[in-house]
Length: 601
Image (cartoon, rainbow, N blue to C red; front, side, top):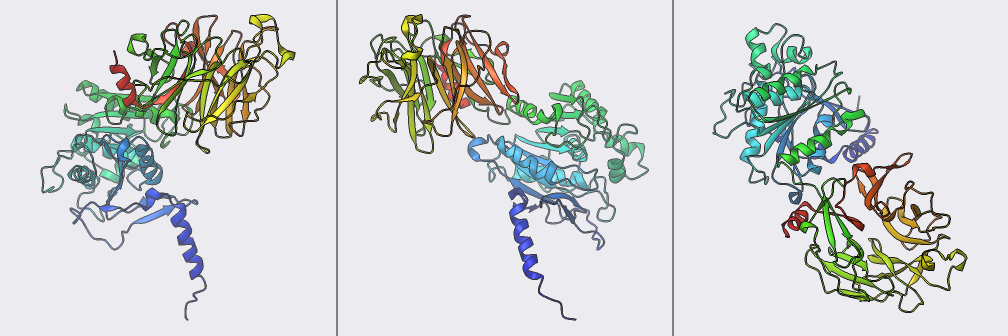
């Protein structure tokens, strides 16, 4: 009977859909590890099989006959040449090559690490003369291949590590302790020693009561000798030359007891080898890059370890721009790596002396990095002037000539206080905004308190800081308002502002939002700060949570609140700022820029 072709279009469509659904890493080119697989036995009854998840991702790979290495190279600008070979788990019976393979490669790439997904052969008497060393042969060859092609792939040959999950962790620790074993003729003198290992809920031991029984049976058979058990119990094979390691495990792991990691760590410690271990209260087995609870954050912990060991570039840090006293000595800068602990730069002396304005002050310095790559700064020049100061810089060290921008020259304004800048990427426009009091406006909220100041927020826009639009009213919340600071969010723009009302006393920070930078902004929220006087808000997103820093000026110290799913929590006790810090702004900068600032004395 002639076969029908009516299903061919459907099959073609399914193939096309899978090519879109399957992640790009799954489509990267696999490189064969061997021209001739060592000690190979050809078997017609053994061929590679792939199981797919419903969304098209590769769930697992079984019966591997041709081991491969899949390079997933990082963006060169982010990399310092580190490479990591990835060994997925699966009890030596299959490879979880998406969850513990290509997905891990994505994470490593995001850190600037060149990742190589190893599809290693699973131990089998059908295709191997000695199944106990088959995976080790592939692991040794993978390291040698990466090291051999280091120049081509822009890799530092002294920064090649291996990461393994579960049984893949056994392979990674086996390589770390058996890299010199002559398990095949390498035909060159290139070392197979990894420079470091990352072991995630790893099988380490083959000993009864500690091992993962399935992994041991698959690797060594049902009745291994004590000599074989000892040889592949890698906690017993550690020498002073074993590479440093980072280990992760959960206490409640019922598949691979936590003693596997503990004993390996203790073995490294005994040999005075650098090691770090993190044991979580719960998480079970197979949580990959983390699922819930504390184990969810092990990748961030590992990232810090990689930074400290110079395997990845230091991430961007933060700089705080502030003034001291009355602002007479100019711009001060502090830096932080985490947004909590802030350290002075240039011994807390000024980076820029004020030169413009009626009183030649530099209060409330607001700095942003613009679309042109320059840092743009505006500041308060006087208590009673009708303009603001402006300067720009490439590096926060060398500044352009200071300029006075008379933003309120055509009005009866008594002042221009706390100017800030926000850049609108969509329109390529900068908006400068500030607080001013105009005596004959908004009289309904005018008070005799505090010299009769009664502010609203005004603004101007510019694309080049040479031509400026006509000044307009930006925000009238129905009360005396100062210190507006606007940030771009996923839903539009958020303005943090100070309610300056003294009778009845407010002196707190609130929020208003808008779809557009130039408004209109919503009614001000309830206070996000506590029972203290706060001013000068500046906000930044750290670890996916907004943090707002502010001046607790009556207490002569700085504070902070952090956004949560249920509101705002006060984290003032967790932050520390240089003594005397006043009204600043926080910006994200590169580690290289911070290092350059540190050099200034």
